[in-house]
Image (cartoon, rainbow, N blue to C red; front, top):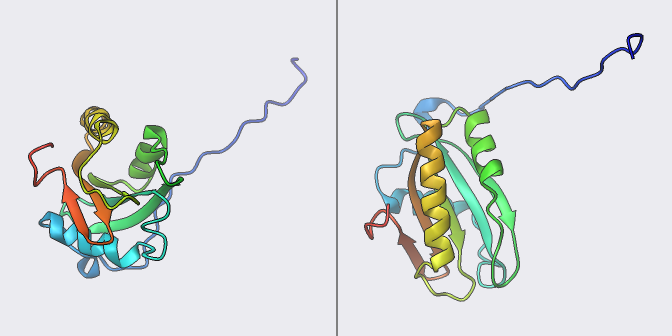
Amino acid sequence: MENQIMQVAEVQLIYKSKVKASLRPKITKSQDAFEVLKSTWNYETIEFVEEFKMLLLNRANRVLGIIDISLGGTAGTIADPKVIFAAAIKSNACGIILAHNHPSGNLNPSQADIDLTKKLKAGGQLLDIGVLDHIILTSEGFYSFTDEGLM
């Protein structure tokens, strides 16, 4: 073992943006977040499969980026907290907004949605990353956890 050269992976933390900070959308209310999400959502599949995405925000609540977390089936998708916070940390986000769609068209959160949001909010507090909202989208509108007092 002494003669073997130790081989390990190099880890780099890099964030590159081609958009000037002043040109990034600013989120001041749930409607702003919904508009940004709506512009990137595939409305051809919104009533077919469930997707989970996340808005990454800087300290001024300007959008650093949008990341696709998962694509599921008709009844659900996986939102892995490790993937969510890895993306938030790598982009140096100060806040995040969670988002997923309900193919059924039902805007009300499930108990699983509520439990996941609480879990991620607690994780965000530990990492000093604000979980500012969780938005559920359908083809007809949106539901905001913050607006409904669930954050």
